[in-house]
Length: 227
Image 1: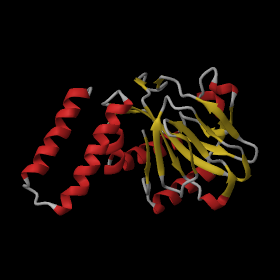
Image 2 (image 1 turned 135 degrees about the horizontal axis):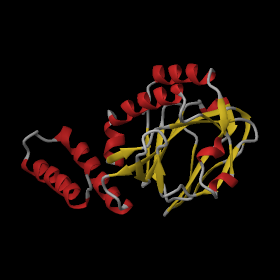
Image 3 (image 1 turned 30 degrees about the horizontal axis):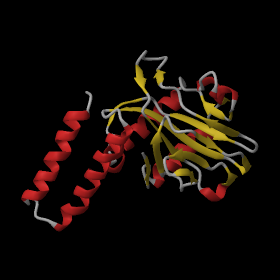
Image 4 (image 1 turned 60 degrees about the horizontal axis):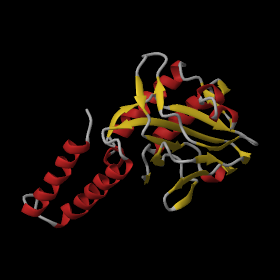
């Protein structure tokens, strides 16, 4: 699964995030990487335990769970507190796969990492390089999106951030556990929901075929979902 969600965070919110991040203290990004990922990760991040990071994370989560496109694609069960990173000139993240399980040091909560999301917080013209590249069944796909846009992808995908050669790339990244574990099944449910949403404006609200499709959608979640 690989989904682009435009405007996951609105322009005013992006500006507020940037104001807070401009005043933040940054630490070595390898501190939240796994043993292997830490060897290929070069960037800076806000301390996950800092008041600023937790406050921004809560605001971002509120925006994501209120976004129908994100919820439709992710079908989230648990979401790890968002992290915030900074790539300056020369920073990069070589090809890697995310850890399968994450634990929150403050709450002790653990989750299986099914999906990862990157929320871009810098405009593309603010930096050179810094593209997110994700490998999926269709090959490598490259993303350098407007500030506020999100890309959601399977955490088991090999992915990387290319070296930044000018400017600064700011972003947030989120790990989550979906109600539907299997990526293929989740993709089918998302495709079905997208088709229903596309048909709805063209049909009556009580159209029997639309009701039947909605019933299939919810019954598939009952069949595959965990709660």
